[in-house]
Amino acid sequence: MRVREFVQDLRARRGKDLLVFACSGSKRTDEQIQAMTVEIPKSEPLGFSEDYRACIERHRPEVVDFSSREFPACLRYCGTFYKQIPVGLWKELVRWPILILSARYGLIRPTDGIRRYDLRLQKAEGRCLRMLPQALIAYLKESDLQRALFFTSRSYMRPFSRTKEVQRVAFLDGKGEEIRGPYGRDYYRVAGLIVRALVSGDVPAELLSVKVKAEGGLR
Image (cartoon, rainbow, N blue to C red):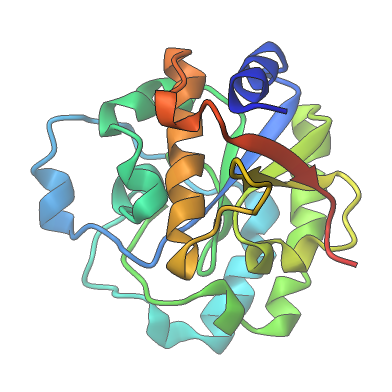
């Protein structure tokens, strides 16, 4: 379907779908966050990802900068995806069913407090990654949500390859080719613009020719 239809469908299904975003390698410093004029209250991570966090802390304790403070994840991350979303818009987005897949913290809400860290999901311990699907399913059941839509790369989908409630959102250009770009930047740029449109209702003209395809997990 076209992007406009996809956005309209997501808006109509609000409260039925969980949106899952990837974390980003780029993170704001404490000073950059403190200089912001937007204030978003920090929450504590929910218990369903506690086993994953404990596993990563046990096997990769060196990845966290403990000199940094905990700030809401949506303020900490500043990669390509997050740059498309004005910081003030998160005040509305946090009311949507949204989780962020963090290599260090697992599945977290945008408001959950995180420190600066340096870890990519591909480098996380396999025994830890295998805990993620169970955590996601528990959250879906607890929140009475029907499915999880991943706005992520395929590599971020890999731990959930056998989870039937999960679909990955892919974008196709006018030639039917998947939009990716170096390091997935083009993908994440489109994803960020679409998420921004969820709140505003306005789809940028540059996306009107883009098609959206939902993919199942890797087999």
